[in-house]
Length: 250
Length: 138
Image (cartoon, rainbow over all chains, first blue to last red; front, top):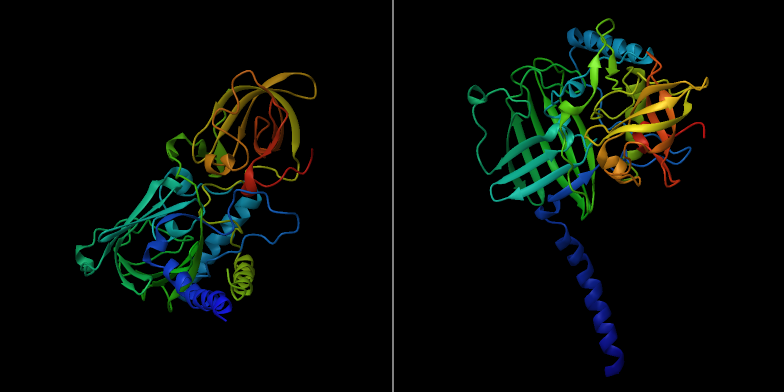
């Protein structure tokens, strides 16, 4: 009896403890580390595999802005089809800023430290500093920055972040915004090796309602962020067509 | 990735397609539309420069065309972080190395292309990552 009860007691103890262990594994610290998209650009996809999904959603632009945006997207798509994709900001070493810099097209590093969460995107060395448990500054005090000004607080294991003060040139998918634009995010660990950033853009001047989507992240174990010197890239604009060209070197 | 996410993601893809959005990650450094992916070519070359820089690695070489003439050619590759995962290394190539390439040539000229596949001096065949896409010829 005594010999039987010991393993059973261990089994019961393990069964009780396992969910607790899983819960303990998911903490605020889970966000710390280096991350990539679950659909990374590293590996050749297997033949027939579905393409990487587009995580962003179409912007709910007001009608007076939507037509111009659609025309611009159409023109860019047609130019691309001709081989004349317009030179984008990133190709000219201009950072896209928020919220585009949260796209893990390149690896992203998250660093938690007292009072701060720092996000570094390998692309263009973009850095954002999220100040924790501080009130958001007045809009009138917010210098327009590509990454804006972010404050955050914890709700359980979820970091809730607000961003204001976006520079006009910080564009997500070419969508314009006003000085009153705000971005709200929820950084939510979903497993010890995954998290999601739920993003909502609000701009009463340009948008009919909230523009929301989710970026997904998977831990990129063992990866160390590469240096990124954009000025070394060889892309330039064709003076005749404006299309992207590569500087050839003999 | 929850199963509920997949239909939503595919839905987003369809919406993006109808809006004429490029179906590539917005955070890519630049478009590869300048390259003709449908008419890939195979080249023999001798490396003159191997430039290991982020966001793009470049290989400058002298290639031999079908008529046997030698000319300079520039090949664009993916980012170091991508190539490192595909068997590349910063010192993989050096001037004088003989390589065999499959590239998508520039639409605008005959002197450059986007790498699809490279055979390096030790005989290994390496690709250029998922974003640049596979070689269609070998």
